[in-house]
Amino acid sequence: MAATAHAPELSISIVAYQPNLDLLRETLRSLRDALEVARTAGSISAAALTVVDNDSSDAAEVEALLPPWHEGTAWLHAQLIRGHGNVGYGRGHDLAIERAAGTYHLVLNPDVVLDSSAILEAVRYLEAHPAIGLLTPHVANATGGREWLCKRYPSVLVLALRGFAPAGMRRPFRRLLDRYEMRDLPEDEIATGIPIATGCFMFARRAPLQAIGGFSPDYFLYFEDFDLSLRLRRLTEIAYVPQVRIVHRGGYATRKGWAHRRLFLQSAVTFFRRHGWRLW
Image (tube, rainbow, N blue to C red; front, side):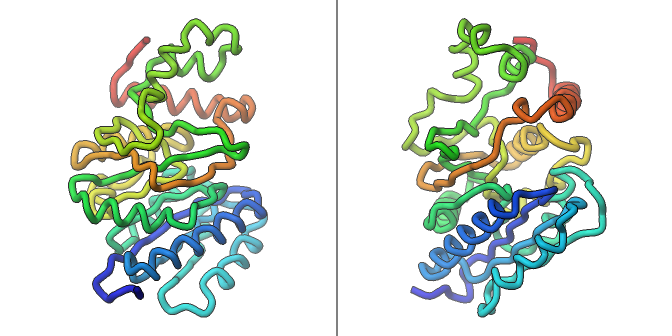
């Protein structure tokens, strides 16, 4: 079934800063495949991709990927926003979110591979559940293991253990850490009332996303997705929908060296000051 004129439109934003071009190509390929499946099923009528370049040294190579991505179609559009410098992850996405006009908006990392039915399943779920404003998918990592993107409210102890404690020190706190990552959620069952959705793939209704102003500019990197989730929940609900499946090939903040750890700590302090401290 071909898309109809009244089918929803989707916008997508990807923020690129010194991206791995091979991974970005794979992300774009899988995104286009998933969009074509959704359009063929009549679930979307058009899609607009915005790649926000945060001052990458290879911006010209990033830009060169876009014309082939949407060539030969009238329903796919793509643009590159550049020249603003490195404004951070959330503010980069905001440059696209504030211009978005479709029914739904997808915040996507440049190191994610979408299952071919991911967009179709996401749109179908949100169309059938108007009380849900944001969904988070089932995520596997590059080696096939599961990633846990649903989170409960963090504590200082949990973040310290995850970020800085060796494995042996974390072992006695396994139950606490598992609870934070919501490992009690059944892997293949839909769950609503999710407190926090972390953000390599955040599929949202555009209206509430814009109503809260998108991501806060107070976070350069890390915790902007935690903050957005809590603010968005004042207007709508968050759901875990395992029928939407992706592979995330990125890593964790605390595995990226001390510069990233410093940014992580700065953003954690900003988050706790705004939303409340929890020590354990």
